[in-house]
Image (cartoon, rainbow, N blue to C red; front, side, top):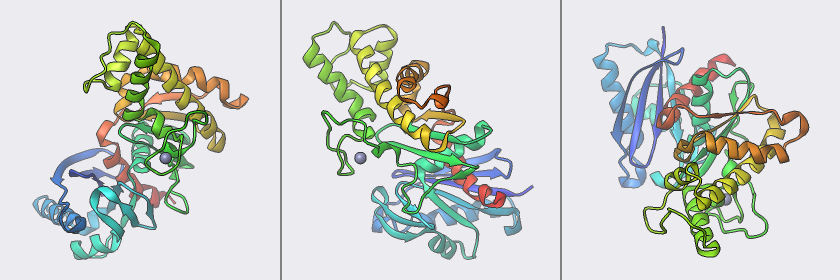
Length: 314
Ligand SMILES: [Zn+2]
């Protein structure tokens, strides 16, 4: 049996997973992300932590297939173009990791949301292609086609959050465009919609417009038939359903997976999405399978490991 490392680099911690080649997680741990010196210590800290682990386990280089990285930004050919949260610009992940590791080893890097898609795909054993959308502070995603992560020519494959879905009252997105999916159904977008409805419609609601307002509260209220909760849920389903219908026509996936913190709303979110999806989807795509993601915060770690595995399948 051979092994692989899946490394999910975030702004506060680096999650390191040690998996076997069939995808079983053997051990995982976190190290803090050192943001000093433009994140210049992150890869050497990671290498040092892994070397210590391998020595402790008496594992040899031949036992390790490679090191996959999920990173918060666009990646082209293992180069992190820009990771704002890490302070990185044009970091050659392979070169820098190998230098710190002290050997030329197999390294593959991908965008964290794209990599999370790969993790879900690998672990859920879905037969065929998927589209994965993650809903949280931002909205991201990943597309798997023919068992491969679509990272694209510009490192922006699966940038699902920046598909335009609002044309009448578009709001400015952090990316500089207007009316992006992310502006409408990220945590901020969902909270903003609830506030707007509360302000304008004077509906009877259990929701309170203060700092405790959250998608979790809003969708819990929806489950209890709260009119504001239901209105926000329906509009969220509309934007997500519309985006999914357009996406489905590109690769005709076997399933669309919804993940990220907001997906904890569960089946009501899937149902609201499907209701609108059906209206916009091409006829032969209407019977699409929608699933909730299952790996939560571990998806990136699994997916990073899969970057190495998928290379072996080529
Ligand atoms: Zn955008």
